Length: 154
Image 1: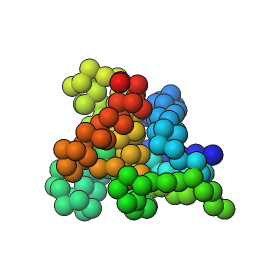
Image 2: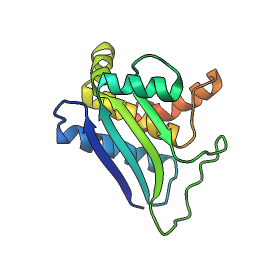
Image 3: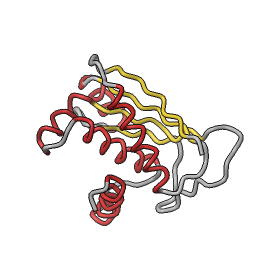
Image 4: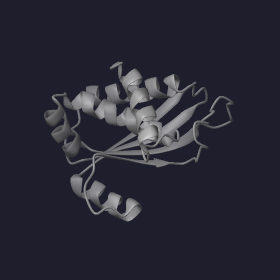
């Protein structure tokens, strides 16, 4: 399985290569943990607070900045993301958009490094791309449990 992550830095900040490498490692770890066995591609953008605010308003009708947005290319029935049969091209799972400024604020608030916060947001977002959500308490518990296992916090 080949995993391609296309990075786009629109955050107006210099981003250390180590942060991008760590995010990619956690994206790969998430896909492997979820049993994805096909070549995949994910778009990963770091953006300004203004851009994520606009995206959140335009696509979710929420007029506020946020930390991460996920834009899946596929819709999976609940608990049925079965990506094991390879096709001729990589499967585009979707887009991850992270506000680096918000991630930094959260890292400080939670006592994390920026790198760890971006890795957590990457795991969270990939799970969304694979059909997880946290709309109900039960769904939230399932998603949080997967995040903890993948992040090594279990």
